[in-house]
Length: 300
DNA sequence: GCAATTTGACCTCG
DNA sequence: CGAGGTCAAATTGC
Image 1 (spheres, rainbow, N blue to C red):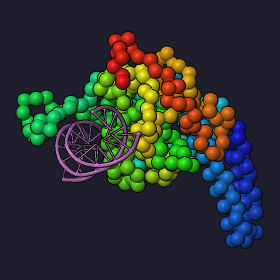
Image 2: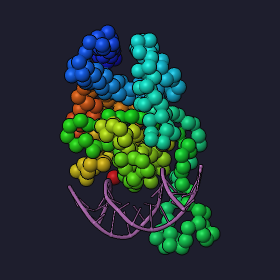
Image 3: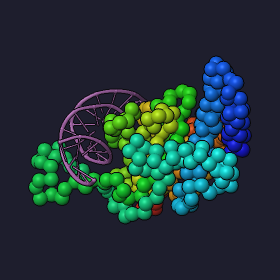
C-alpha cells in the first residue's frame, strides 16, 4: 500500500507542477505532462485493484467492514479524497453497468438446498409450469447470500482464464448481457449434486477493464471440499483448477479467504505483474480435501 | 465411457 | 415483453 501511495504522491506532485506552470506550457509539453500524470495514476489504480481484492476478501471474512476503514485508506482519503471517492465509486461501489452490486455485500438470507428442479426432456416438453408437478424454482437476484469481488485477470498467458478461488466450479451457462461487451459465465459448485452444495458464481469482465473480472458469489459451500484432483479435462479455459495454498481451513471461510491468503502467500509484495495472483504450482493432489463423514467415498 | 463445456431453449421476474 | 438465470441435449476432450 505504501508503494501505491508513493505513486499517488508522485502523481499529485506532477499535477501540482502542471498547475503551477500551466500558463507557460506549450501544447506539446502539456500533452506530455498529462500523459505522465495519466500513466502514474493508471499505475496506482492497477496496484490498488490488487489491494482491493485482498481487502474485499478480508471484508468477507469479517462480514462487516466500513468501506474506508484501514489506516492507509484513511490516509489516502486525506491525501486525495476525490481520487479515493472516484475510485471507490468505480471499483468499490456500483461497479456493474447496471449499478446494482457493491464490491462486497453480504446478504444473509435463507439459502434453500437446491435452487432448481431437474426436468427430463419429456417433462420440459410437457409445457412450462403446466401440469400438476411443482414449477421449476429459480433463484433470482437478492436471493441467498451474495458477494461480489473484483479480481484482476492474468496479464500474460491465457487471459481468458477466470479467477481461481480454490474451489472447483462447473460451468453451466453463459450469456450475453445487455450493454456488456463480454458475456457472463455461470458456474456452480462441482459437488452441487453430490453434496447438495448451493454455491454458485458468475464471472464477467468489466466493460471498461477487460483485465478485471467481476465475480459474483452466491450461496456458500456446504460441500467443504476443495478441488477433487482435476485432470486434463479440467484444463479447459473456463475450468482451470488451480490453488496456491496447501493450508487447511477446518472452517470454510469461503473462496475469498483462500484467494486472499493465496495472494498474500504467493505475492511477497504487490507488483504490477499480476501473474503471481494465481500461480498454479501445486499439483491437484495438494488440494486439501476433507469430507463430511456421511459422504463416504462418494466423490470419485 | 465419463465428465466438462457449449449453447439454444426455457423459465421467472420486474 | 425483455433481460437475466438455468436446464439439458449435444459436443468435446481425455
